[in-house]
Image 1 (cartoon, rainbow, N blue to C red):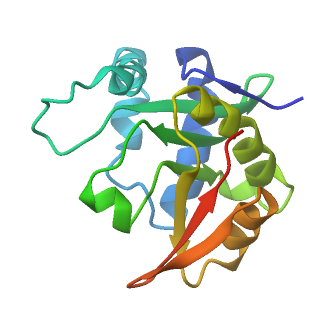
Image 2: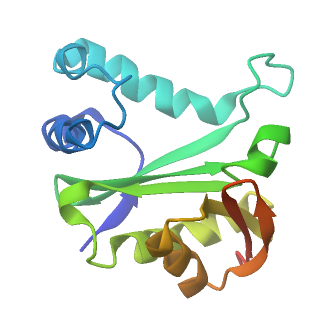
Image 3: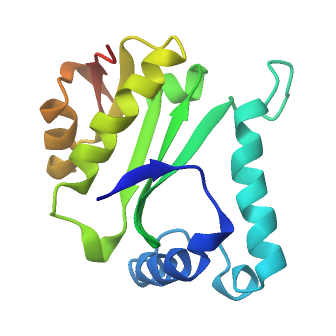
Length: 168
């Protein structure tokens, strides 16, 4: 049964297979497949994801603290979700409190809807209620995922639809 887990090196093989699928769609090209194949590089990548939770308010990178979680079934990586602990100006426009993605070969099986439903109480525990979630205007599937989790349409900013989703 799928579950949210903290990113870990034991998912390297499946994560890399998912990354190949994403590269075929010309996405996440910034994540070098060749370099992430090296166990020590993948371990540093996982450590960096986990460290994002502890970004300080005075970090001048423009990033905010976020909890990164992976949706897995056994040792198979199915997707990922990021819970941003607070919003900055950029995230108010695009991204919101929560971003998620299902690996291409596992889409259309309800994973995104269940993954988001599982993550909402975690966002609530961080004091986020409601959570702002955005999606591209053309992404009808993502809109359905958000609405299936109680998302209420809150307007549009350029090419992004905005929804407020209860976390309690």
